[in-house]
Length: 205
Image (cartoon, rainbow, N blue to C red; front, side):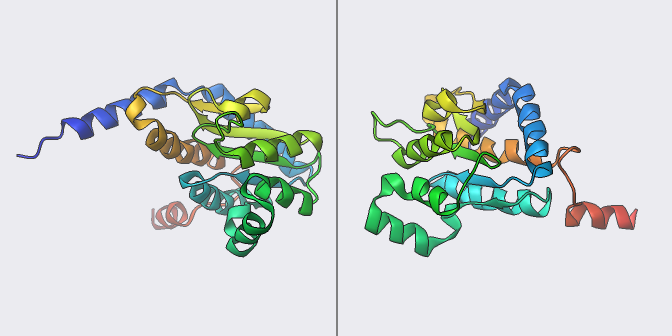
């Protein structure tokens, strides 16, 4: 018989995390995004690695489900790699914000395991993007792991994914980015469009 103890432990930890997340922080992001949408602001999502893939998925949800104008630099591989090659990895997001003419009406949403740390040279591009965002008086939101790093330090509303097992900090943080942003886009205050599956089920009822 296949032993399932590791899988059971992983899922138990996921349950512990879900019950420990600060739900009022999620609600606050929802309310702030309602204000952003009403004022015609844009939402820029930043992340690297697995978090970058989450950003791409989330952009779709914010645009299609919530009618929020949203973008992520990781969706344009040509520009991302050109900026990395010509200007350097650490400024790839901050220079993109400059070209996008980001303003005080807009907001940054960071998906990250560590939240960025210049001293440890972890996600310096996120740190410099946040510095640029602060200079432009933009709102900063985040879903990050552990103590949240630089994102938590300078962010307006940042959801921390609690760490319950040092062996699984990254997979738990990246998995719960998805849970939290889906919670946000499904919120009645933000949800403007019914998802296809739910609408199909409702039509058949």
